[in-house]
Image (cartoon, rainbow, N blue to C red):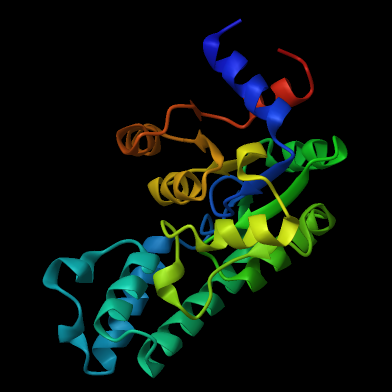
Length: 235
């Protein structure tokens, strides 16, 4: 039995509540329509509004729509411009739900964890509406509802700020020391750490594995199958 398996079993045994990041551990939201394309369209829209100077030169090639959104918010916090850009991103997320790819083993892991009596929540930087739409389409909404905590109008509270994690903890009356978060980004790890909850990193490729290791995550899995197998007692 490997040390990693022992660590997984220990975390699963103590986790009364489990928080999932959405895009990554639950599905690949932009599998059919790339996030890079959405970011390009955000930048193009800003330029069409005569706001080409709003982003630093390197930011115009930024492949992450959430980074673009935050960059604009830093310059014009909580402005009508930011509200419009955020609404456009929410629209793109909603469209992306149709072609999103379920993360392998995610559906089974969610259903099995819920069947054991654990309480589940989503803590994400995505808008809550598209998250609920996806979960409903997969027949998973009852595993989470009403505990879906996503992006608000205050973009300063996006992860790595622990706001959405703490909202989930407060709403469920959860003890952070008995809560586990499954995430695939540095921001997930930092939010979990700052909220005092345990963390398991999901890294579907070497780049994500490297990022999580560099930020300080200790327990990282390349697939959700080890979590599912451990939960079912098959390891």
